[in-house]
Length: 93
Image (cartoon, rainbow, N blue to C red; front, side, top):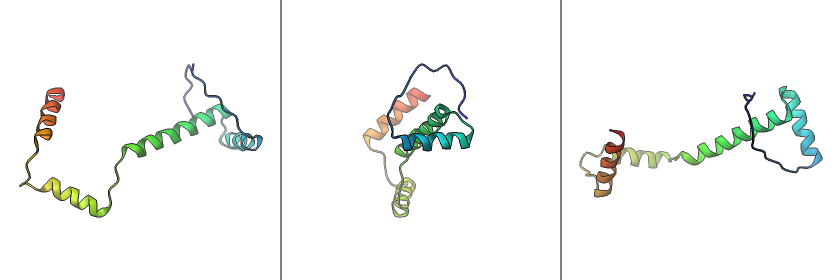
């Protein structure tokens, strides 16, 4: 169940009576109000989508190539990487 909060924002949308009935039935099965059910499922779906957009997935071959490049001690960082590392160290410490 979603925690009770002081909410000011609203989302309104129209849907068919059949979909509304389905949502009402599902909310009842979960012991939730329609609002709590809708919010919890919308937030879950939104967070999942956002997470999936932030994750880079590699094939096994690409993962092996990437790991090999990281492990290659003979390679040297380019100037952009050196500058980025300096900025990071300056910000983070």
